[in-house]
Amino acid sequence: MTRSTMFRHTSRALLALTVVATLAMGTTACEPTRAPNKSHPVLLIHGWGLGADTDCGSTFDRMITQMKAEGFTGPFIRMGFYSGDTNCDMSLRDWGPVEDGSHFSVLSQAFSKYVYATYTSKGKTVDVVGYSMGGNVVRGAVEGAQAGQAGFSAPIDVQDAVTFGAPMNGAAWYSSFCLWGMCSSMKPGADDVNWLQKVGNPQGLHGTEWTAFGSDADAVTPVDSALKIDVPANRKVHLTDVPHTGDTNYMGRPDVVTRADKALAEANS
Image (spheres, rainbow, N blue to C red):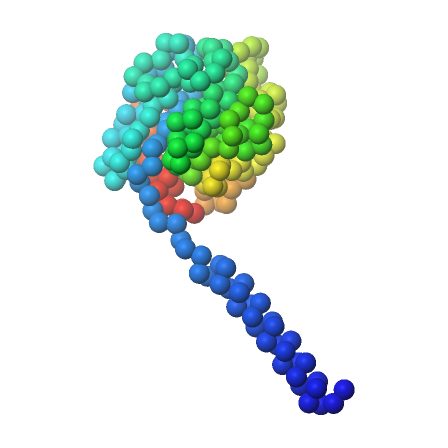
């Protein structure tokens, strides 16, 4: 091979590498950043209660008021599932065989069907807030729909999801004494919990960003369980002094709600 021929081959190789590198840069550097969005419907689902009569208003209205003040336009849908629920905007009982003692996986199936029929099938994206077991319901709905599991809808379009004190790897040790019904589906090692953990980061139709909140002061959900989801560290919010229940719980703390609002509105926050 002559020196000129070698030079031509070398030049072509370098040119090819340059083109490949440029194309690779173009697919990332030129990719548009998702604009902040505070106009999606926000679905808020409560957790397990000792009595089958949760008040969706007292659970979520303080948070909704703050979200509106911080620029969210809604609509805000407070979701219930107990026969005695009050001040809820809809009930999952209308979307599946949900009873007061149903395991949370059954609620997940009904949730997926509601979201798909009401929003996804009409081209609408939603954001979701799941409190306590409600976080398990949301994660299970996205997971089951993504995988096409029996009883679930087609994949649902949940863009951002926030979980507050969700027992994603089981509730506190004393839940082991729950022998039946909804409570038993949340104890460590329960079938529902093991199923939930099969997928570390379930994704909705166009991708889902999860932000999980847990607290050392949460006596219902151990912080390690609340943060047991495969997401970047900045979207695992480890708090120290927020209780699970009471006026200063997750939804009652303005600083926590502001952090949740950022996660719901912005990408990779």
